[in-house]
Length: 285
Image 1 (cartoon, rainbow, N blue to C red):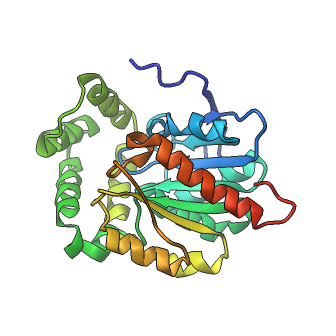
Image 2: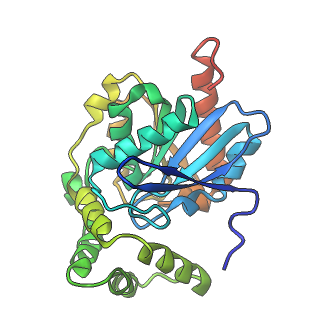
Image 3: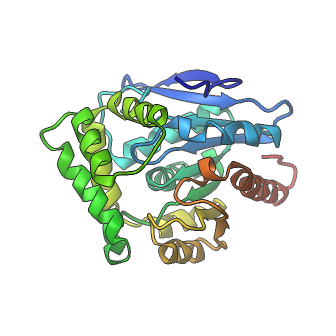
């Protein structure tokens, strides 16, 4: 359908419980370190298909992973955030050195728990359009987000993934190129219904772990599209303060800056990774 994967290497990582995690990787010629990117709810590793090569040209070998039960990552479960987090720890350790972890939206909730569970596996964490807790913790600030997500949650009950997706797209009525709309639908439908149900529950109700995250000492960054309203920006700004960092807005973008403004997103990530590498004498990653 799309030539999305030119120059990208596909691979899988087998977990002891039978889960198979699918990855895309763009190799840097002279790598300065490794980046691992994690998608949001209804997303997948392809959300980073343009960002990975951009990071590779800047010297960062960059991978993106499908969470278990999503797209090409197969699993019989479980699908709770703690289990998803341990998958990320396993991938990071498989890559052979501490990685710069990038979590988008729901992937940010998972990534926070991965760093808390295995801080030695990560050189840094960047939260992109994500928050400190599930949406219900700041429900009054994001009524549209809550409305859309709870509608989708209801559509999943007693219906197939395909039926739920069709109800979601009809409800949201977002104009999109037909080929892209078809790709997004097929990717979501390829996943696990049980995973989707659990993911949306956690996206709504996940508790705040920012204090534990800050206590790890792993450097953190907070990035969001300048027009993103999925998580309220004041919520993300407050999270940044708690993590001892300054939020970085990406111009000309909303909730998926790694697709809407690839160059600016890559530039912001490269600046953060490079600064952290310089802060650790004798380490380039």
